[in-house]
Length: 450
Ligand SMILES: C[S@@+](CC[C@H](N)C(=O)[O-])C[C@H]1O[C@@H](n2cnc3c(N)ncnc32)[C@H](O)[C@@H]1O
Image (tube, rainbow, N blue to C red):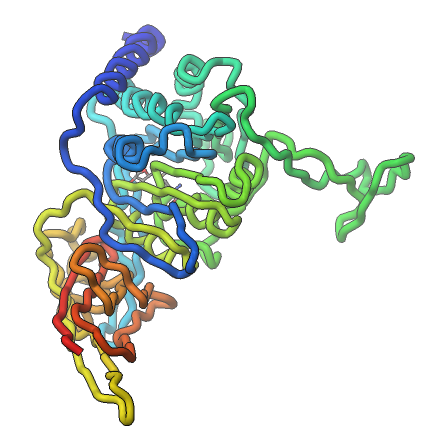
């Protein structure tokens, strides 16, 4: 049956599913905080979660009481492209000579029963997103030609036609060309307000004068740069922003990573400093990174291990304060090998405590790789396994409940720190949490008794 006839049932069945979930007693796996990363004294509501976003949204509503509290929700879901996307991971070590970049699958955009299944997945989430938004809240969904036309119809029904604010065309240069079509060089973003009172701060952009010459109109401010004369005008709905370049400092290697410049426009125009901004298809954490830069609190969720490891590293490098959540974990089968040394400090009752990473035993069943890429991992596992880590952290005052590290070490410039020192007394239990490039995590607890 043609999809146009299926839209009403997609909408109604998704609405029933949403209502059923809302009225049900919580079941299944819940989320729990596994690490609290504090880089500032101030409290922060920022959260990074690994798990399915529909379950996570329920957790936010039930346990965090966030209904009606989120100012901005941006989502960049799979586009119904019927493809799989890789992450490019470059591992380097002086102990491993030949180490080409590996390309594990980061996520699949494959739908067994077609577009209907895909639209149902989105639609039920749209209902919950509407509930999470504050009265002045804004919702953005980032798509392209594959499904944006159908999604616009569904959102007009869920949010109300009169809550539609803008269709933004994001135009870029990169990507392929076609022989039988014009080159596809844009994505489409739909912007809705939760209510008519949605918050919006217009942004400005340059508008070059005809011929780049001055107009000299009375009362109009004109400026000049290397191209010529221009005025400042309210930003239009077609945005030229470059994709993240190969050599860009913000490049994470995660497939379909969006540029911070694009997200900055959304965050700046639709939220105020201190507001809560969320992304439930977080990928490498671009919304989180941008929100952090602009002084907003953020929530980012992704079901994938590579995405979570990548966001964790990214936000740790930015010295962000946030809580990491995971669903109740399966038994841990990776092992981090560490040594602990304590030395008295002369003329004091304090001791120097040193934690050193010695090795990492990755369970090969947890590697989503085949062929040559798998061989690269096996080589690293044997010769320099610590290079497989993306991040680790140490809590010298572990309370037996939550890992609350005083020191965290993201991998930076292909290098992972191996030693952590602390001077103190009354150090009893030490917890060390490590996350590898695939998102597998280990928690190791040591008895120091210092
Ligand atoms: C297009 S990517 C997002 C890229 C991101 N905006 C960035 O800049 O890196 C879509 C993401 O949605 C995630 N995803 C798909 N289904 C999900 C689900 N049910 N729950 C949580 N995340 C999901 C995928 O793992 C993938 O990382």
